[in-house]
Image (cartoon, rainbow, N blue to C red):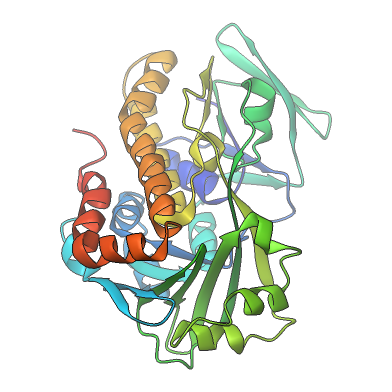
Length: 369
């Protein structure tokens, strides 16, 4: 079977790995000169690690990662709102870890001993013809494939060209993502919530810290570090100090937070996966998790003895509930964390741990039965 994957990010590389393990040799094209690693760092919850286990990479990623055994949420004044021992929640599934995005991408890429990746190449358009799909490339080539997998991210050209009304939707928040020194005794996932503003720090090692900050898009301005420091100047320890100490020239990834509503992104011998199909707010930390799960399930469905249209329909049915659940919970969590302080703080103090278990409970379930 001849398979083309469009996009060499986490979704595309994971799909190639999953297919390779089942005896296929997919091709990958990537419009950039190297695999995209925007976002600096990545937080993998237990279901993502389980899916990496299905790809034979769980132990390798654990060695590259920093274990995250708990999550703590504080008010902007430093008062404890909620603390969850995440190891207990995810014990039946997999550990939670944090690592730089590039080592994860490199591990996936290096596992592809039978897959060719063409960088700097784009798909201009693709046409279904009989039992094949013709693909027209930017270098002038035209080739036939049995299946085309669109894994080209939230601004997917494959989605824009083949499906209607699919532009990403802004949720009204914008974010900074950056790396800084971990000299603040932050040992695990720690978030602080203020009025329409969030600071989150996750240690990547004893000496390196990932910092995420977001605010209403109307307050984001040009996204400068001085703007970040001004917006969070009234936050107490421990994260207020992290923001205040940032160098104004520190490199940061800046972006509006957008989502792509989950739909049936299926056509004749064409399917979308990962952020191309269902990007969500980072509130559930499931971007990579859903992409890797997509890859595992899609490869499983394709490997079964059934026509391609049935394999793709089965894939959609197996994934529909989980991705829609993640998007629903992401919206609910964003609504809660941007609620008035007294409302949000009271809810987190009283039922925060219950909400955490409810949000993630369905993701502990197996990918298929």
